[in-house]
Image 1 (cartoon, rainbow, N blue to C red):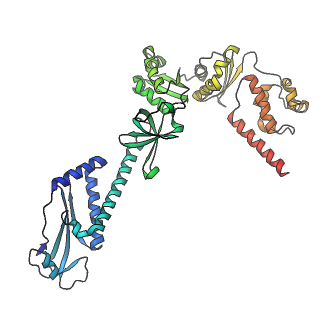
Image 2: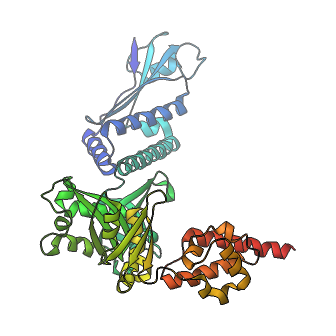
Image 3: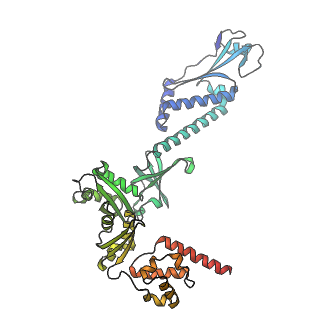
Length: 448
């Protein structure tokens, strides 16, 4: 025969409403939340009645039921308090007359849960439940946005920091770092302003343990997504973006190709009276965008990439991915662009190292630099077969440094003078190599 404690009625509608509101506000599946509540109750039952306790928990939030049934054997002498209860105590709480060997069932409901477990265990259960819910919230946020990397979102600026913008999107905090903002644009930002950006990266654990969602407006992919939004032919796959080279906020070059001979890729991107491209330009803080029709022929592609400059001649080495380009004197500034921007972006777009040569000034005899070189170095260079400034610039750096009188620092200065004559800029890898060489030489001198 089984006996049980008296059960009191509870307000189920209040439980149902509270549970539904929690699931909705926390964006957690109802079944999952119900399972967490059950696990939390199991934890406090074991804390109170021992690990060997025999119990059953019913959690049905659809009906508002939360009940715990604790089963213990009725015995004359209690040897294990986790699983047994004395006959005297069982009959004290049971409505039915129990005998030795019967099962005593104690029912715990929301009405008497505080009396059964005490404030400390109830507080522990509350902390455990809140922690589990926070973990699920974090997992949900990470899971949702990790699959949306590369997607444009529209959010609202809710905090402006010195180096970052904090953006709120669907109640989720995101960060737009300074290095991912378009230069000179921050002055436009105001609190509560709507802003577009691309999800660049999602980190599982950021500040405060929350997932960190990094946004970007300076990324090339942001520009690509704007094209997909504004130009239906790109979204539909009729036109494809083949390459992008970009100085955010200043200038971009975008290579496009059409899979339909009837569709002009550049014209489709520009739109009637420039309406399509202008909407992208406005979004990018008036960034200039050069649209270039892509070509499988690298010579044609490079010539188009250097627009608006007109090219006289072009020599390509596919093995070294370099191109020597002859331009007229009146086209040099156009080809180079402001601070070398045009030729640099064209190089990034095509994947070729572009070397500009001015027409009529293709090369300079090395004797023109006799004062800077000195007769001894000049003679040794001629013995090596280096007779012109271009040959000097193209010569192997290590072989040049074998000349005893020629230091890394001096070589760097000579290259600078010659590059000025050709209106070219030094390559980053050469600067790095010669800077290291010069530094080693100074260190060796100090040791000596």
